[in-house]
Length: 67
Image (cartoon, rainbow, N blue to C red; front, side):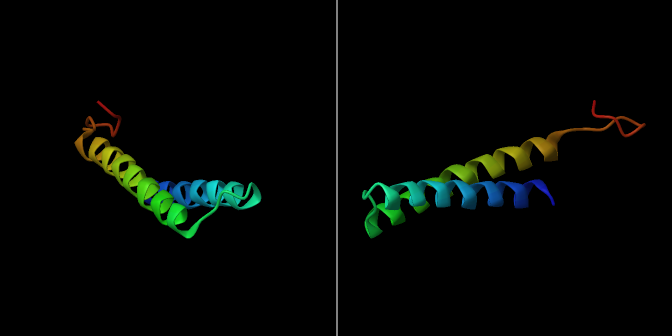
């Protein structure tokens, strides 16, 4: 599993945990769900982009070790 898939799984799990909490505590609304999904989506897009950028800019030496 690559980093993108790992981040996507974390994203889904965290959104589900928060929505479950809101359901259990009576705070859930459809609009709140939409807002949470949008916000988490933006945050995890930024995290994924940052990790991808770091991985793309790392340079290996001749032996394959990170320089």
